[in-house]
Length: 362
Image (tube, rainbow, N blue to C red; front, side, top):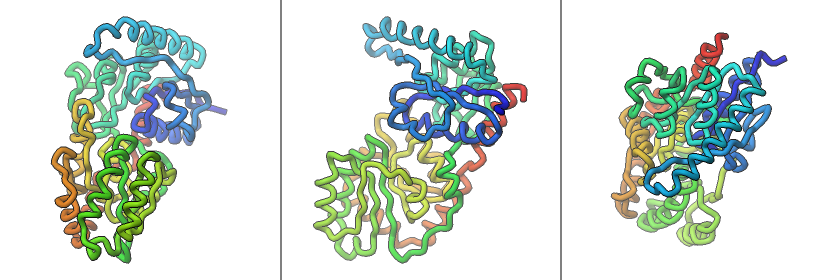
């Protein structure tokens, strides 16, 4: 029999849903039921989410850059608030935990109105815009990084550093032994936008290497479907050992098998790299709001776990030389892997679950 129910609210992208899933897995282990409130994108990213029920709640951004859209979006958010309020009154959760994105807005606001304890968790080193507003209404704020930029002054007393929860599939690879250097295993991925950039850029990087520099590299790369044929043809022509796919279901296993990762620096990526313990060359998404990916990457690099390369300054030959040089420094790669492991917080889901239970009076 369930000990009670928690409602988790998250935007429907992997960056928001993955840490919510990790908390849901931990709460399930503790005997609680979980309901998820999110948006339509859950169909792509939430297939393995362990929720008793998933509720798609209307939401919208309130960007002032296009003021003529604000009234319609405000009405949609109000509709989401009313829907969330009705669900919460029926479910009667012990607490509501939000993970950012505008779909978390209606549930947290409804929880505040109904006097249900609530918490917002921010995955990034810079607080998201929705969470900045919600922090004033929530009873607690949890952060993934020791320093959380953008936290409103009046919410600082609510802050608890938990780390960013990672899913069980990643925890299975926690502290995996660093691979032997029989081949050089290079993993390249970056989500939808990152896959587009890396799919265009990495063939040029390998083309800038000599055949001797490419020898012994085993590449695993996420490539969008529309770029697959061109990238595959380019790598085949170079004689490069490459495995390409639009999406890898076993990404944590592939991180564990890698000597080096080239990636974007979303919060879940940084968290999984830290838990598994792998060094990374990070190319932050250049147009991310508030430069959150850059701040995430800088935190990881400052720990000695990786290197930051802004996209605007990248050029194929220079990056090829950097990768070739780094590949030859096996000791430095192993030291960076150890530093990544120290940066990781494998108990983040447990710490966040402790906070959720504390809010619920358990």
